[in-house]
Amino acid sequence: MKITSRVVDVFPFRIRGNRIEFLVLQMSPEYHKDIPAGKVIWQAVHGLVEAGETIPQAGLREFREETGLEPVAAYQLDDVHAQRIPQVGHQQDRLPVKDLKQEDWIDLTVVFAVKCGEAAEPTLSIEHVAYKWLDRDEAEQHLRVAAHRRALLEIEQGFKLYNFENMWEIK
Image 1 (cartoon, rainbow, N blue to C red):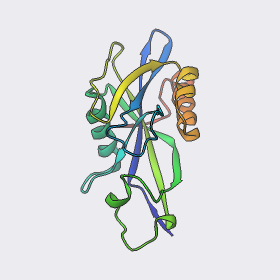
Image 2: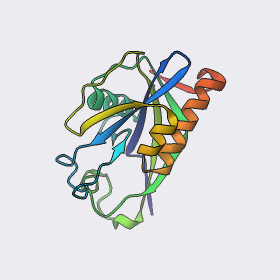
Image 3: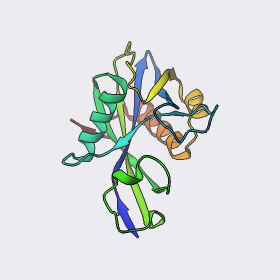
Image 4: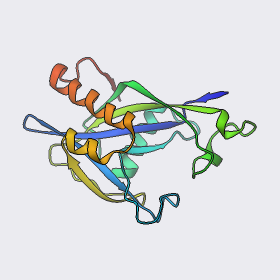
C-alpha cells in the first residue's frame, strides 16, 4: 500500500457581521468528464499538489486559480481526509507512483480554510460553472462528501469559539 499526500481541499469562507458564509462551487461537466449526465455536483476548492510545491503552497495556488480571489488569511485544519484513490478519473495519471495498482493507494488530503474579504465575489476558473455563498447548514446540503461537511463545522467552531486563535495560520 502506498500512502500519498497529493491532494488539497480548501474551504473559502467570509464573515459578514457575526455570520460565517462558505463558498461552494458547482463543478463543470465539460471540464470534469466523469460527472454523470444531468448530475450537479458542488464542492470546495480541490486540487493536486504540483512538483516542487509544498502542500500549503498548493492549497493557496488552487484557491487563487479556482476563485480568482486573494486570501485575507489561511489556516490548516486539524482534520486530514483519508481516501482510496479511485481507478477512474483525471487524477490517476498525474499521481506519483506508477507501479502500484490504484486500489493500493491511500491519499491523505490536507485541508485548509481560507478567509476572504467580506464582499468577496469569485471569478471562476473553467473547472466550475456557478458558485454560492452559504451558511453552514445550507453548504452541508450541497456537499456530497462527509469529510467536507465535517470541515465546515471545524471552521465554524474555530471562528465562533476561538476566533481562529487555535488554528495553524499559513502564509
